[in-house]
Length: 500
Ligand SMILES: [Zn+2]
Image 1 (tube, helix red, strand yellow):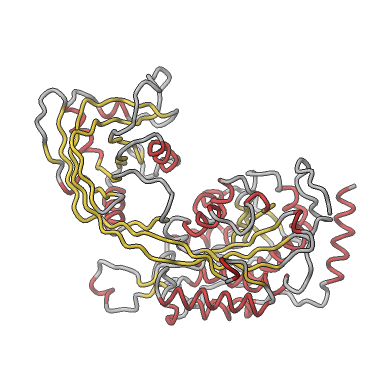
Image 2 (tube, rainbow, N blue to C red; image 1 turned 90 degrees about the vertical axis):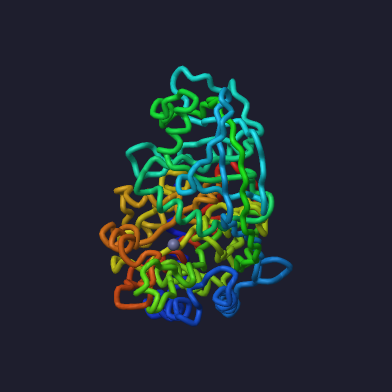
């Protein structure tokens, strides 16, 4: 029954929009050329490149007929960021019996403090391993202790997938500090260098330990020997958290440079006639890396602007054209458009949005993220990142069938699920998808990731493929029509909200 109704309605919709031209490659290229131009300086948050970028997006959405939905009637929602860069860090460790403090060598550890300065003596040290079948889980308290937490398993260059969640849990439980143990010799210098350069975080209530850092596994193993323990036996890699008192104490002196600055999400809206039935959300990140660093002196003489044409001028371009096609109609639900900042720094703009949304977060029935869409000429195949995560898959399949798109079922694009802004919404229970031809083309994605990705060469040139992206933009328009209409998408069966 429902399927018949959908077909009828889709016939009405296609008749209604018969005059609308499909979105073309030139429509997308126009915005990409501007957003990824050297004038925009690589769109780094907190720079003049940001000002140009957020102004451009707001003016395009305004011209399309959206209304502003940021703070106090503006297009912008400020996002307060703090960059923490390690300056001085010293850690001395002693075992409980001898009380002979030994300093950990500077190249074996790196630490930063939450506040500008941190000094503490005699911190008890604890290891937060993965609980084996017969662990003493729960018997050790963590408050006021310095915790070691495995960040990657020995003999693997993969980060443990729950590292961040485990770290946050330890911080919530009162750990004074958390030090990630890096077992991989290839990862160690990379993690260390990136930590050394500074880490940007949301200001405000997000929880941080008083001190956080990284230590090389070999150093950790040596520390453990001082209390007669074998590190290898501790590094199990599955199960719940198992806390082990290490009979070690630490003295720490840590100074950190703090730089606070403001960036902005851009938020616009198409007002629905029945907002009580919820809203839908489109999002994509506007930020990129600005001027890229290099350790190669020859490279310093070249253009060092990371223009981010694919990542993510292309996604923003899709959102501008999608907004222009959907505006001027009166959907049932509100349709929000969000351009996020600081995605490249850890999905921070998206996290700021869910912390302080323009309407109650549970009003959003679905979110569609657009990121790095300009990688394929295939107008038919799409990857649906987020498939299998929630109850809307069937509806996505209906729209795909209606639009003649074929869903890639290989699951290969799923590795990107947690690396994109949509994940922040999934974490909060909001159905979120990233749907694009780009990630259905495994060869192209791999070539991009191993090539221009996060490099100065991600700029406007012949390697941009926009046919798939243009078809993706049309598909996003179709998704908007379907999910913003209470006729085609009545909402979750369980929600039971009355139609008013
Ligand atoms: Zn990126």
